[in-house]
Image 1: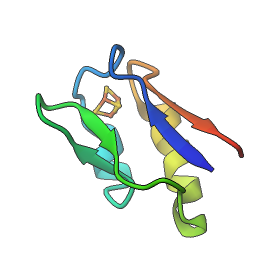
Image 2: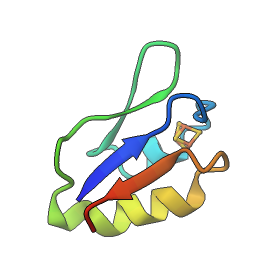
Image 3: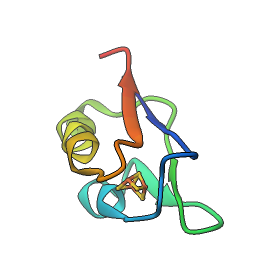
Image 4: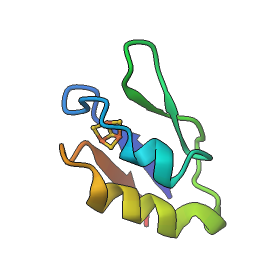
Length: 64
Ligand code: F3S
């Protein structure tokens, strides 16, 4: 599974960073970036939680 952050939607709320810092990091400008090509199995549930918690619906997944 891949995680994707839509840079146009992200407003830097940071929930994703708190929920799953292994997958989401902070890019220049205070927005989220995805740190890994493939989400490790142990973090899949946290990424789904981040998807539902992002207030801007900026996170999506591919291949799950
Ligand atoms: Fe951005 Fe949503 Fe995370 S607004 S910083 S992708 S919680």
